[in-house]
Length: 320
Image (cartoon, rainbow, N blue to C red; front, side, top):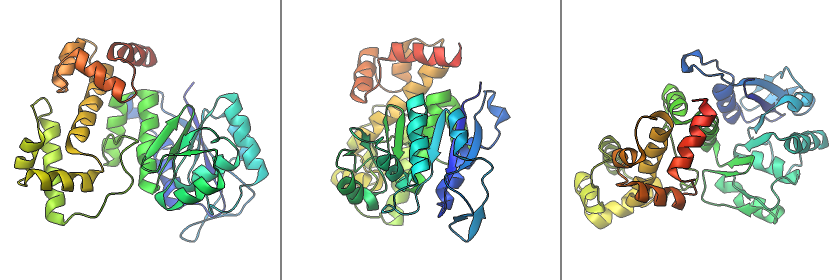
């Protein structure tokens, strides 16, 4: 059976976040050749449901539909100081106990916190609300930097656009990197941003510097096997080494070599999932990670299972 997603709609609905969830899960995608998600938009409370922008939303399903959901998405909450309705809290607790995956965008984390489902877990939310979440729910381990945090079957994400990164993470987990990349291409967004990339950058870059770093990142991705160093990347960006390192981190939240390693690991994961004929040493070489031993070490440092096991798991999920 296709994976079934329940998308919550509430009074004071966050229109952008709701639209992201609908775009990801409600749009049919026959070109992907997979059993794509089915979905249900569920009213979290009695209507009428008013949304930002003066819109009114009529949800076709009630909270009872959560009983059939494999994943529940909470696309924000109207007021971080307002407790969610008891019926919503109970429905989420029941869904989680049944085995559903629960996912939040931005202020939606407060709904799960009120339900006690974040206690003892890592979680994040929009940087504006981090202190409020920490103060109101001290049992939650707050990750203040992350774009999104996956802790078992609960996934929380930061501000609005980070919700898209989290939703693509779900697609990648459910269908693999190749499908996620094709969905990202259709959405015209980056195929992969790690969850622990920083929410905030130190300061905005001048347009000229930002363009130079963006061009460099594209060039490195196209030639990722090369022996890139900080010095060589700085030269390519036409900056001094120290200036380059500072401005790269301002733009991305990561030091250049940390970003490069994450790009290489992301490519290696995609190749492990899609190129079964290639041995692991060849994949390590194509991704610029050098050898199987080096790739295994970088996978471990990023909290991933060893490459051979990762490949077997990906093959089992795809039915190969």
